[in-house]
Image (tube, rainbow, N blue to C red):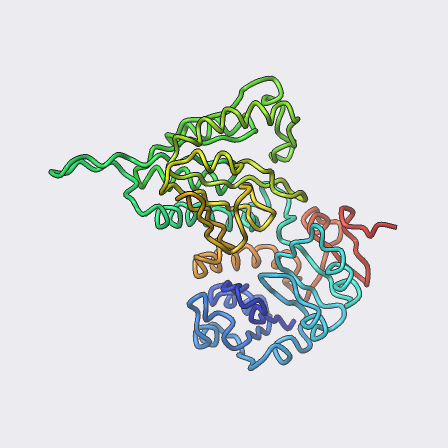
Length: 378
């Protein structure tokens, strides 16, 4: 089995899909691993480390992908990359499949078997493969660091001979993996932390981290979670009540970090321009959902916008701002899943289409889009 790890074609993607650690594991399974020269440079992994782990270094994408049976990437392959991958090859990446009908059709037309790591089911067996959690955890941590840098003041209370510095007030909106890590990080840095989420189960999680929970806790709130643990879309009436509560709370905050996402839908709008205007000059709003339309009305992808002294931060690819750590975790997620697709006796790809992991993540196969959630509309 020939395994290829090309460099990411997106200039703004510093992560890499394999590390020397996972290369060694693939080699131990009998794979011949080819890594494109420079693929790990932005993540702090030089070519020589891949060679020491047993990989061959190829000078370009064409040679890297030539005759590959398994291709590992961070982001889904471009049309140009698909032209370099042989029909029947298996491609595993974060495919970002929602609303990408043309990209899915291109992968189907290229004849590759494409698997989307974001669709991994949240079951015990797949925890080690959960890229959403591994990357969101880092995003939540980095969000606090970035917000603190933009804030320009100390987060913890400090008692000095020159006087007392008050602790910053930090509000986290959306208490998934990223939100919980943001709460924990902000607490470690000494901020006074509050948080909100529409899922009732998160209240206990927030309080267990030493933060205060803020929400309208009515009957709708008690039913606001899917069986898969995701947030449900709330009624307009609830949104209005929650917005009123949040608006009065945001006006008192120094930093607001938003993390709310609903799979397959635009990010819910949580922070309005009026809410931003109510904040003190020098305050910061950091929008982790900016790539999905943003939780804040004023956030702009890839930009730091300032309105009346308030900074609205819309950094893209926040996990990639910790490229080395993000790559290590992502590569382990990939290996854990890819290992289930490899026949340990023959060292070849052997996909079991009845496996629940395969059913959940397979996007294309044999020239067609096979995932039930992404079938072409007639």
